[in-house]
Length: 90
Image 1 (cartoon, rainbow, N blue to C red):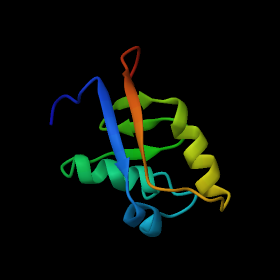
Image 2: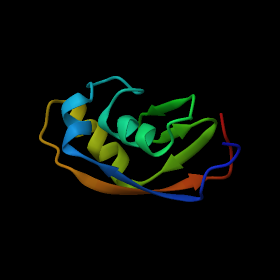
Image 3: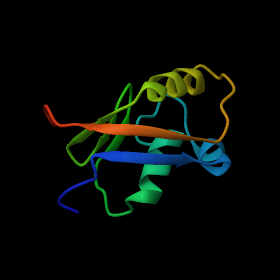
Image 4: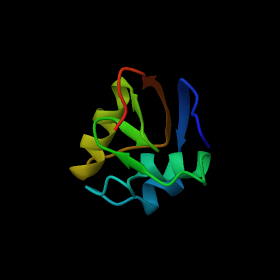
């Protein structure tokens, strides 16, 4: 895919949470959910932002979810909305 939408609604399921790996940017629950949305994407990673094939997405809930999951805290299925950062890409 040569372009991605400006906004994404990412549904993180119980399965994503169960299969996700803490402190692993390309296999955390958010990354697994994005992979379901874009199975042909070749570069997905999540830190305090989401990166998909050179595009950066930011949203308030991303870092909160990642911090909680990575520290062993409780997270539940949810929808995270993010917007593409058009100022730069990696």
